[in-house]
Amino acid sequence: MKQHIFFDLDGTLTDSAPGILNSLRHAFAGFGLAPSEAILRSYIGPPLRESFARHFSSPADVEKAVKLYREYFSERGLFENAVYPGVCDMLRRLSSQSRLYLATSKPEVFALRIMDHFDLSAFFNGMHGAELNGPRHDKADVLRHALASHDVPIADAVMVGDRRHDVEGAHAVGMPCVGVAYGYGGRAELEAAGADAVAEDMTALEQLLLARP
Image 1 (cartoon, helix red, strand yellow):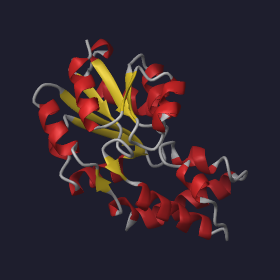
Image 2 (cartoon, one colour):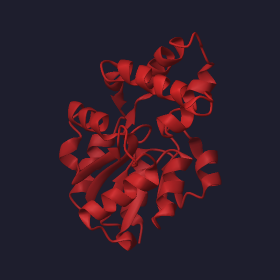
Image 3 (cartoon, rainbow, N blue to C red):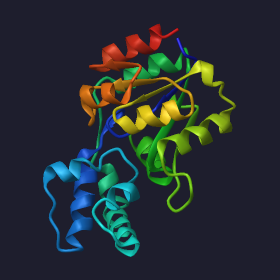
Image 4 (cartoon, rainbow, N blue to C red):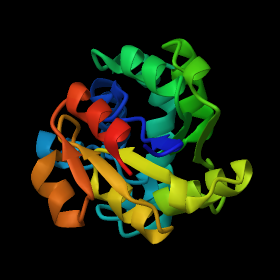
């Protein structure tokens, strides 16, 4: 069992899709656009600017879209969210045996509010996210910052997430990653990205984390 477990937030601990999708709709409406549900769902997980840059060629439009998204998200979207069933019980058991950390590409200022709102913060030894306007924005950046902040040895750490960005970010810093198929990426995406293991549900995830050498 790894003594240091890093968790993603969206799609791993909470089902945040409603708030994210509504924030995206608000942002695109500011341009008179209404993308399909499939396009909107592709935004769940990756860094926000990276996603908007796929649809807007102008940096100014990307920044406008980010501003509009955060306008809705900071007031309403972040709480249009729900903790997955079984998360709290799993975290309670794991935190009695390992040190837990949050590592999310969501801006840290929003992630901390969400964790506090849903009473998840007490299970974690550290919580880290992206910077609103700084250089720390993708999963690898967040993990490097978190590892350094807590002096965590890579050999005794594992990442848990639901998208390929979690797998790629973990591998970029030399950490294994357990994917969760119940999130937004699905088993096929996680396996294609090279996840070291994939859990179908919360029970399987806990068993994998407890069993990892």
